[in-house]
Image 1 (cartoon, rainbow, N blue to C red):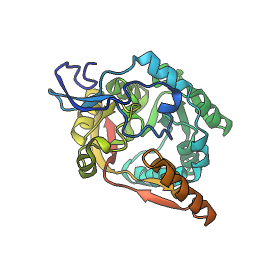
Image 2 (image 1 turned 90 degrees about the horizontal axis):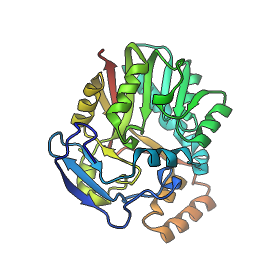
Image 3 (image 1 turned 90 degrees about the vertical axis):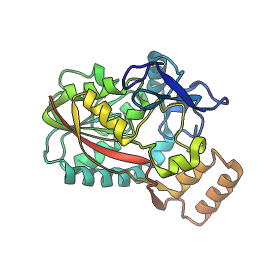
Length: 296
């Protein structure tokens, strides 16, 4: 595949996983997928430095899997997701100097829309999963089922566009950032979270880092995300960390991808002692929040 940032073809393979080369089911790309440390091949572009999955499925095939996603586990974890998004929104409001209509791209079941609407934001969403978009719509949110490129004419002039854990899923992230620019108002802001592979924990774990996954197509550093934003008409103005709040039950569920028997026993014990719903904030420095302002 050509480089998703600069379009070049001079790449070198940096990680290989022969056990899982292709996406084979919609569950693989669900938000709560346990397809950890299974990624096929990841290459690095010699020209710009970005890392990305190659080879990969064609764009139409990938979108078809996302459209078919159903993720009931996510619904069980919405309380913890609200805490994650509540913190993210407080940080957004502290750094973004404008208010107005907000578009959440990849809104899934609408949890961030719930949180933002409760704080007075006029919100809309875009979501490729038919099931997830339906859940968000059932809550009363205005959500376009599909992609940003196919959003209706009314989805324009947003003061703020958000992309939470979304950019790494795009086959062409620069194109999606351009589309975000097209629907943003003059002087509007983009706030996104994505993985930061220029971090100590990623270097320490190498191929065992859990977020190397088939559904993640591009892996960013602060430098490469800045370059992608600039290519799409955005100026990166700030960066901070990003913490995921998860329940102990969900954390142990994820552990099951590595130690299934131990995870089952620990989950059973947590439920017996009624501690599974307790939450923990996870921030190892391998995720970042990026704030950008429209430049054109």
